[in-house]
Amino acid sequence: MSESALAIMEDSFLEPVREWPEISKHTALKPLSVFPLDAMPGILQAMTKEISESVQVQPESAGLALLTIAAAAAGRENIYSIKQGLDTRPNLFVLVFVERGGRKSSLYAPGMAPVFKWITDHLPDYRKAMSRYYLKLRERESLDVKICRLGNSTGAADELRRETLQGEIDRMKEDLRDPAFIADDCTPEGLFELFDRTQGQVAIFTDDGRTFAKILKGIYNGGESREDLHLRGFDCKNPIVKHRAGKPSAIIPKPFENALVMLQTDFLHKLAESEDLFQSGYMSRCIFCYPDSMAGTRGYTEREISETVARQYSELITSLLNQNYYRRIDNDKVFQLDPEAKSLWIEFYNRIETAIGEGGELSRMADIAIRFPEFCRKFALLMPIVEGRDTITGADMARAITLTEYFQIHAERSFSVMKIISLPDEARRTLKAIKNKQLNEFTSREVQRHTGMTAEQSENGIIALVSRNYCRLKAEQPEAQGAGRNPSPVYESNPEIWTAKQ
Image (cartoon, rainbow, N blue to C red; front, side, top):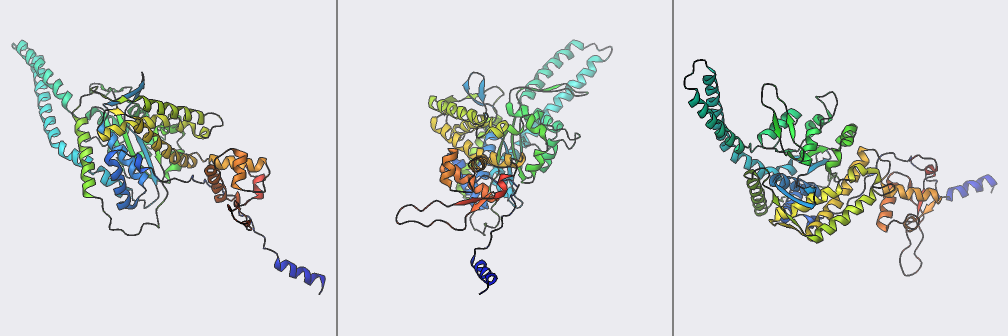
């Protein structure tokens, strides 16, 4: 046999060369764990399960929506303090990003049903009260004209009547509160008018947040973001004052806003284009929910929401709305904070503070992560509100921390897309170790040793790198030698990583 023929035969038995695909520059989403349903308070836990299973949506979307609805129903006059000056009220700003066909409306409807029913039931009485109020205003205006008329010989009696009328008008004004607190017009002007009519409590709830997002980005304002009212509505501290032409100036002493805005995932990129929303702190006030898609897994089901659970949920929301509606401003219900709850929160606060520092695992998203301790305090307050108690216990704070840590992953996923982070932190640390140690081949255990990460963190980092073609599972894996634990999978590094920029 000739030498050339032998070479051809040998080549035919060699393993084909595995070509490397190009390293992907798309963001790899951090994997999600199972939603901690047990951390949800009271009837919201059961209602989350009912919506998730009947509508076939991810439970975190349903759970966070229900928490926001309960927060809005409970209202502003619920408060507790970690220390003097560090007060917490229960309102939430929530952004839910789901894929097209993600059943946003079906998720939204059952949670909002008791809210809309309550508004419908209370509107007739409000409209009657408004009619009586305007009658008194017209009567006072007629007296004003009469008093100003020259030659009026009964001025003293009219002045006395006017003072009496003004007192009645002022008292009526104190009791006039529009029950329709859901914002349809989200322009700054429309939002201010709603704040004025509802005595300072509004909610932006929508299952299609495109219009809201466009207004927020400044579609009617030359591209300048319009988040100033929202910031004050979230903080619930500084008043809003508006000087209106031809009308008395209006002041909202303690604005209180909740937001539940559902958007398609493409708005992650669109919102990221407005750097002002990050600089102003609006984005840091938002709790993000970015669930995995369920498309292709939702077979038809006869499952329906339990009538018993729906009734109990409706009773809760109606009760909270009634308490809120008839409670006067500054008539706060003050919740007590158990020492164990305070201790747990301080520990969580310190952990987040360390993580957002230079080199920390949350340092690249510090402008969002800085609010995690505040979200935790708000979740903790919702526990006794929903369950009808007056004290925030250690168990309440532990559940709040669990929820906050879970939605921290959603924030990382959202932020990685919005700010175009090249790699999740665990993957970045893994890649750094591969480069520093020149690891052409490696195992998860080696990554742990070189990075100090846990086994789970190491595996998540490798999964992210594999999804981006930075590495791959080696074709030939070591065989198990006798009894005992199977050897760790071996990965090989893409030669491109030695020159790729991160």
